[in-house]
Length: 155
Image (cartoon, rainbow, N blue to C red; front, top):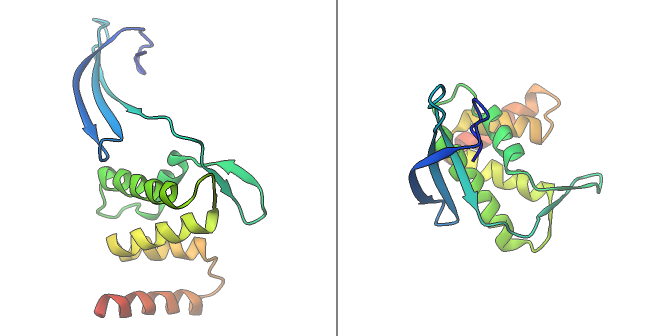
């Protein structure tokens, strides 16, 4: 595996661990270049059939875990949510999509799943995501969503 820091072709595996319900292997590696010797993490995943996202305008693009992660990261910015938790959420969403959809998934299904996950993790992150996803146009719509969230948390 090529070192991302110095570009050396050689690295050694320090530790391997199965994770994500045994669907991936996490490997801690160390560059063998004496001048570098930095450590980094790689992931090994089974390559599954591509999942295609059908957007609102009917355009199609391949499902991208990293794009989903970045969206969650933006919603959770400056919130007490770990990167590991975000990885877990992305994995859970991807697995549920693959279980329900064979090849094509509407983008709305992804957005709704993200909202469900964020609602249970962090109310502020949920409202941030919802304001973009549902395209809030005014303060009243925003306030209604916050009140609905508060009602669900009370019951």
